[in-house]
Image (cartoon, rainbow over all chains, first blue to last red; front, side, top):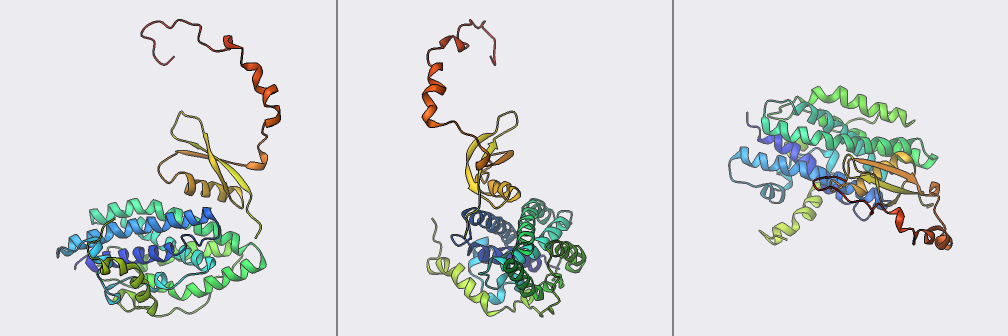
Length: 240
Length: 93
Protein backbone atom coordinates (compact mmCIF):
# COMPACT_ATOMS: atom_id res chain seq x y z
CA UNK A 1 0.00 0.00 0.00
CA UNK A 2 1.23 3.48 -0.86
CA UNK A 3 2.73 5.59 1.87
CA UNK A 4 1.39 8.81 0.34
CA UNK A 5 -2.00 9.09 2.15
CA UNK A 6 -0.37 8.49 5.52
CA UNK A 7 2.52 10.91 5.06
CA UNK A 8 0.09 13.52 3.71
CA UNK A 9 -2.18 13.07 6.73
CA UNK A 10 0.70 13.73 9.13
CA UNK A 11 1.96 16.63 6.98
CA UNK A 12 -1.50 18.22 6.86
CA UNK A 13 -1.94 17.91 10.64
CA UNK A 14 1.33 19.81 11.13
CA UNK A 15 0.67 22.35 8.35
CA UNK A 16 -2.85 23.29 9.43
CA UNK A 17 -1.80 23.46 13.07
CA UNK A 18 1.10 25.73 12.10
CA UNK A 19 -1.25 28.05 10.25
CA UNK A 20 -3.64 28.23 13.21
CA UNK A 21 -0.80 28.77 15.67
CA UNK A 22 0.58 31.58 13.51
CA UNK A 23 -2.69 33.47 14.09
CA UNK A 24 -1.27 34.36 17.51
CA UNK A 25 1.69 36.25 16.12
CA UNK A 26 1.26 39.87 17.28
CA UNK A 27 -1.80 38.83 19.31
CA UNK A 28 -0.32 36.77 22.17
CA UNK A 29 -0.80 38.09 25.71
CA UNK A 30 2.91 38.96 26.11
CA UNK A 31 5.84 39.45 23.77
CA UNK A 32 7.57 36.38 25.24
CA UNK A 33 4.53 34.17 24.59
CA UNK A 34 4.25 35.64 21.10
CA UNK A 35 7.73 34.35 20.33
CA UNK A 36 7.11 31.01 22.01
CA UNK A 37 3.99 30.41 19.89
CA UNK A 38 5.77 31.59 16.75
CA UNK A 39 8.59 29.12 17.46
CA UNK A 40 6.09 26.30 17.97
CA UNK A 41 4.25 27.16 14.75
CA UNK A 42 7.51 27.28 12.83
CA UNK A 43 8.56 23.89 14.22
CA UNK A 44 5.27 22.46 12.97
CA UNK A 45 5.72 24.16 9.61
CA UNK A 46 9.19 22.62 9.31
CA UNK A 47 7.76 19.16 10.00
CA UNK A 48 5.03 19.79 7.42
CA UNK A 49 7.55 20.86 4.79
CA UNK A 50 9.71 17.76 5.24
CA UNK A 51 6.69 15.46 5.15
CA UNK A 52 5.07 17.19 2.15
CA UNK A 53 8.32 17.04 0.17
CA UNK A 54 8.61 13.35 0.93
CA UNK A 55 4.96 12.67 0.05
CA UNK A 56 5.55 14.42 -3.29
CA UNK A 57 8.69 12.38 -3.94
CA UNK A 58 7.00 9.05 -3.10
CA UNK A 59 3.97 9.95 -5.21
CA UNK A 60 6.31 10.47 -8.16
CA UNK A 61 4.06 12.90 -10.03
CA UNK A 62 6.46 15.81 -9.72
CA UNK A 63 4.52 17.71 -7.07
CA UNK A 64 6.63 19.85 -4.72
CA UNK A 65 5.91 20.84 -1.12
CA UNK A 66 4.48 24.13 -2.43
CA UNK A 67 2.19 22.37 -4.91
CA UNK A 68 0.87 20.19 -2.12
CA UNK A 69 0.47 23.00 0.42
CA UNK A 70 -0.93 25.68 -1.86
CA UNK A 71 -2.69 23.97 -4.76
CA UNK A 72 -4.86 21.36 -3.08
CA UNK A 73 -8.50 22.06 -2.15
CA UNK A 74 -9.97 21.27 1.23
CA UNK A 75 -11.33 17.89 0.09
CA UNK A 76 -7.75 16.81 -0.64
CA UNK A 77 -6.50 17.68 2.85
CA UNK A 78 -6.24 14.81 5.31
CA UNK A 79 -5.76 16.61 8.66
CA UNK A 80 -7.88 15.89 11.73
CA UNK A 81 -10.61 18.30 12.83
CA UNK A 82 -8.75 19.02 16.08
CA UNK A 83 -6.31 21.34 14.33
CA UNK A 84 -8.52 23.10 11.76
CA UNK A 85 -11.07 24.90 13.93
CA UNK A 86 -10.46 28.56 14.83
CA UNK A 87 -8.76 29.29 18.14
CA UNK A 88 -8.92 32.79 19.52
CA UNK A 89 -8.86 31.92 23.22
CA UNK A 90 -5.49 31.29 24.83
CA UNK A 91 -6.91 28.48 26.99
CA UNK A 92 -8.25 26.73 23.91
CA UNK A 93 -4.88 27.05 22.22
CA UNK A 94 -3.13 25.50 25.21
CA UNK A 95 -5.71 22.71 25.60
CA UNK A 96 -5.37 21.87 21.91
CA UNK A 97 -1.60 22.05 22.01
CA UNK A 98 -1.52 19.77 25.05
CA UNK A 99 -3.52 17.13 23.19
CA UNK A 100 -1.88 17.60 19.80
CA UNK A 101 1.73 17.71 21.01
CA UNK A 102 1.18 14.75 23.36
CA UNK A 103 -0.10 12.79 20.37
CA UNK A 104 2.71 14.00 18.07
CA UNK A 105 5.27 13.11 20.72
CA UNK A 106 4.13 9.48 20.98
CA UNK A 107 3.68 9.30 17.21
CA UNK A 108 7.11 10.63 16.27
CA UNK A 109 8.81 8.56 18.97
CA UNK A 110 7.23 5.44 17.44
CA UNK A 111 7.96 6.53 13.85
CA UNK A 112 11.62 7.19 14.71
CA UNK A 113 12.12 3.41 14.65
CA UNK A 114 9.74 2.59 11.80
CA UNK A 115 10.82 0.81 8.63
CA UNK A 116 10.92 3.86 6.35
CA UNK A 117 14.29 5.62 6.69
CA UNK A 118 13.08 9.08 5.57
CA UNK A 119 10.03 9.16 7.82
CA UNK A 120 12.19 7.79 10.61
CA UNK A 121 14.74 10.61 10.20
CA UNK A 122 12.05 13.32 10.05
CA UNK A 123 10.41 11.87 13.17
CA UNK A 124 13.67 11.61 15.11
CA UNK A 125 14.30 15.32 14.59
CA UNK A 126 10.69 16.35 15.25
CA UNK A 127 10.27 14.42 18.48
CA UNK A 128 12.61 16.83 20.30
CA UNK A 129 10.61 19.79 19.02
CA UNK A 130 7.21 18.44 20.02
CA UNK A 131 8.48 17.38 23.44
CA UNK A 132 9.12 21.07 24.07
CA UNK A 133 5.66 22.00 22.75
CA UNK A 134 4.11 19.48 25.09
CA UNK A 135 5.97 20.92 28.03
CA UNK A 136 4.93 24.45 27.09
CA UNK A 137 1.29 23.38 27.02
CA UNK A 138 1.72 21.48 30.29
CA UNK A 139 3.17 24.49 32.13
CA UNK A 140 0.34 26.76 30.98
CA UNK A 141 -2.36 24.19 31.70
CA UNK A 142 -1.00 23.86 35.26
CA UNK A 143 -0.90 27.62 35.77
CA UNK A 144 -4.30 28.37 34.27
CA UNK A 145 -6.03 25.36 35.82
CA UNK A 146 -4.53 25.97 39.26
CA UNK A 147 -4.59 29.78 38.96
CA UNK A 148 -7.54 32.08 39.62
CA UNK A 149 -11.19 31.09 39.65
CA UNK A 150 -11.66 32.61 36.19
CA UNK A 151 -8.58 30.98 34.66
CA UNK A 152 -9.66 27.62 36.11
CA UNK A 153 -13.14 27.93 34.58
CA UNK A 154 -11.83 29.03 31.19
CA UNK A 155 -9.21 26.27 31.05
CA UNK A 156 -11.87 23.70 31.93
CA UNK A 157 -14.19 25.11 29.26
CA UNK A 158 -11.35 24.95 26.74
CA UNK A 159 -10.59 21.30 27.55
CA UNK A 160 -14.28 20.42 27.35
CA UNK A 161 -14.49 22.11 23.93
CA UNK A 162 -11.43 20.30 22.50
CA UNK A 163 -12.13 16.88 24.00
CA UNK A 164 -14.67 15.67 21.38
CA UNK A 165 -11.93 15.97 18.74
CA UNK A 166 -9.37 13.78 20.52
CA UNK A 167 -10.62 10.37 19.34
CA UNK A 168 -10.14 11.16 15.65
CA UNK A 169 -6.37 11.07 16.26
CA UNK A 170 -6.60 7.33 16.90
CA UNK A 171 -8.68 6.38 13.86
CA UNK A 172 -7.13 4.11 11.20
CA UNK A 173 -5.26 5.76 8.31
CA UNK A 174 -4.46 4.04 4.99
CA UNK A 175 -0.84 2.97 4.78
CA UNK A 176 -0.07 3.82 8.42
CA UNK A 177 3.48 3.04 9.53
CA UNK A 178 2.34 3.14 13.15
CA UNK A 179 -1.14 1.96 14.10
CA UNK A 180 -2.89 5.13 15.37
CA UNK A 181 -4.89 3.11 17.92
CA UNK A 182 -1.64 1.87 19.52
CA UNK A 183 -0.85 5.44 20.67
CA UNK A 184 -4.15 6.03 22.45
CA UNK A 185 -3.33 4.81 25.95
CA UNK A 186 -0.01 6.63 26.23
CA UNK A 187 -1.42 9.90 24.89
CA UNK A 188 -4.52 9.88 27.08
CA UNK A 189 -2.52 8.90 30.18
CA UNK A 190 -0.17 11.82 29.63
CA UNK A 191 -2.91 14.37 28.98
CA UNK A 192 -5.07 13.18 31.86
CA UNK A 193 -2.23 13.34 34.35
CA UNK A 194 -1.54 16.99 33.39
CA UNK A 195 -5.26 17.79 33.61
CA UNK A 196 -5.47 16.28 37.07
CA UNK A 197 -2.28 18.00 38.27
CA UNK A 198 -3.86 21.26 37.13
CA UNK A 199 -6.85 20.59 39.47
CA UNK A 200 -9.07 20.25 36.38
CA UNK A 201 -11.56 17.49 35.56
CA UNK A 202 -10.97 15.08 32.69
CA UNK A 203 -13.79 16.03 30.28
CA UNK A 204 -16.63 13.62 29.64
CA UNK A 205 -17.86 15.34 26.47
CA UNK A 206 -18.73 12.75 23.80
CA UNK A 207 -16.47 12.39 20.75
CA UNK A 208 -17.62 13.75 17.38
CA UNK A 209 -17.21 11.58 14.31
CA UNK A 210 -14.56 13.48 12.39
CA UNK A 211 -13.90 12.86 8.73
CA UNK A 212 -10.59 14.61 8.20
CA UNK A 213 -8.70 11.47 7.19
CA UNK A 214 -11.25 10.96 4.38
CA UNK A 215 -11.16 14.58 3.20
CA UNK A 216 -14.38 15.60 4.94
CA UNK A 217 -13.85 18.82 6.89
CA UNK A 218 -15.60 21.47 8.95
CA UNK A 219 -16.45 24.71 7.17
CA UNK A 220 -13.47 26.34 8.88
CA UNK A 221 -10.77 24.61 6.82
CA UNK A 222 -11.88 26.32 3.59
CA UNK A 223 -11.46 29.75 5.19
CA UNK A 224 -8.06 28.80 6.58
CA UNK A 225 -6.89 27.58 3.18
CA UNK A 226 -8.20 30.70 1.44
CA UNK A 227 -5.98 32.74 3.75
CA UNK A 228 -2.98 30.43 3.45
CA UNK A 229 -3.16 29.80 -0.30
CA UNK A 230 -4.33 33.19 -1.57
CA UNK A 231 -0.91 34.68 -2.34
CA UNK A 232 0.44 31.61 -4.10
CA UNK A 233 -2.69 31.12 -6.21
CA UNK A 234 -2.98 34.80 -7.17
CA UNK A 235 0.70 35.04 -8.10
CA UNK A 236 1.81 31.59 -9.28
CA UNK A 237 5.53 31.04 -8.80
CA UNK A 238 6.00 34.20 -6.74
CA UNK A 239 9.17 34.33 -4.63
CA UNK A 240 10.51 36.76 -2.02
CA UNK B 1 -3.42 43.62 33.72
CA UNK B 2 -0.51 43.74 36.13
CA UNK B 3 2.71 43.13 34.28
CA UNK B 4 4.83 40.08 34.96
CA UNK B 5 8.09 40.65 36.89
CA UNK B 6 11.28 41.43 35.01
CA UNK B 7 14.14 38.91 34.72
CA UNK B 8 17.71 39.32 33.48
CA UNK B 9 18.98 36.69 31.06
CA UNK B 10 22.52 35.30 30.80
CA UNK B 11 23.63 32.97 28.00
CA UNK B 12 26.71 30.76 27.80
CA UNK B 13 27.46 30.52 24.11
CA UNK B 14 29.64 27.42 24.44
CA UNK B 15 31.34 25.26 26.99
CA UNK B 16 34.29 26.91 28.69
CA UNK B 17 32.99 30.46 28.25
CA UNK B 18 31.21 32.50 30.89
CA UNK B 19 27.53 33.32 30.92
CA UNK B 20 27.06 36.77 29.40
CA UNK B 21 24.17 39.14 30.01
CA UNK B 22 22.07 39.36 26.84
CA UNK B 23 18.97 41.25 27.92
CA UNK B 24 15.81 40.98 29.97
CA UNK B 25 12.27 39.66 29.70
CA UNK B 26 9.00 39.35 31.60
CA UNK B 27 7.76 36.09 33.11
CA UNK B 28 5.33 35.14 35.89
CA UNK B 29 7.78 32.77 37.63
CA UNK B 30 11.27 31.26 37.42
CA UNK B 31 10.29 28.18 35.42
CA UNK B 32 8.58 30.21 32.71
CA UNK B 33 11.36 32.80 32.79
CA UNK B 34 13.78 30.07 31.74
CA UNK B 35 11.43 28.89 28.98
CA UNK B 36 10.88 32.45 27.76
CA UNK B 37 14.63 33.01 27.74
CA UNK B 38 15.03 29.94 25.56
CA UNK B 39 12.35 31.20 23.17
CA UNK B 40 13.48 34.83 23.04
CA UNK B 41 17.27 34.61 23.24
CA UNK B 42 18.42 31.21 21.90
CA UNK B 43 16.41 30.88 18.69
CA UNK B 44 19.54 30.97 16.53
CA UNK B 45 21.81 28.54 18.37
CA UNK B 46 23.17 31.29 20.60
CA UNK B 47 23.68 29.12 23.65
CA UNK B 48 24.24 25.88 25.49
CA UNK B 49 23.25 27.13 28.94
CA UNK B 50 20.92 29.79 30.35
CA UNK B 51 20.62 31.68 33.62
CA UNK B 52 17.69 33.85 34.60
CA UNK B 53 17.83 36.16 37.62
CA UNK B 54 15.02 38.31 39.00
CA UNK B 55 15.98 41.89 38.08
CA UNK B 56 14.86 43.03 41.53
CA UNK B 57 17.57 40.81 43.10
CA UNK B 58 20.40 42.55 41.29
CA UNK B 59 22.32 45.05 43.40
CA UNK B 60 23.76 47.73 41.13
CA UNK B 61 26.37 50.39 41.70
CA UNK B 62 25.04 53.93 41.98
CA UNK B 63 25.79 56.08 38.90
CA UNK B 64 26.20 59.03 41.31
CA UNK B 65 29.12 57.23 42.95
CA UNK B 66 30.81 56.46 39.68
CA UNK B 67 33.79 58.74 40.31
CA UNK B 68 34.52 57.41 43.78
CA UNK B 69 34.03 53.85 42.60
CA UNK B 70 35.98 53.79 39.40
CA UNK B 71 38.21 56.83 38.92
CA UNK B 72 40.86 55.78 41.47
CA UNK B 73 41.80 52.91 39.13
CA UNK B 74 42.61 55.33 36.32
CA UNK B 75 46.27 55.94 37.31
CA UNK B 76 47.17 52.47 38.59
CA UNK B 77 48.81 51.35 35.41
CA UNK B 78 51.00 48.89 37.32
CA UNK B 79 47.90 46.77 37.95
CA UNK B 80 47.86 45.74 34.31
CA UNK B 81 49.90 42.62 33.57
CA UNK B 82 51.79 44.32 30.75
CA UNK B 83 55.27 44.49 32.24
CA UNK B 84 56.34 40.96 31.48
CA UNK B 85 58.32 39.86 28.46
CA UNK B 86 56.71 36.81 26.95
CA UNK B 87 59.15 34.20 25.61
CA UNK B 88 58.74 33.39 21.93
CA UNK B 89 56.55 30.42 21.15
CA UNK B 90 54.42 30.59 24.28
CA UNK B 91 50.78 30.39 23.31
CA UNK B 92 47.57 30.97 25.26
CA UNK B 93 49.13 33.45 27.69
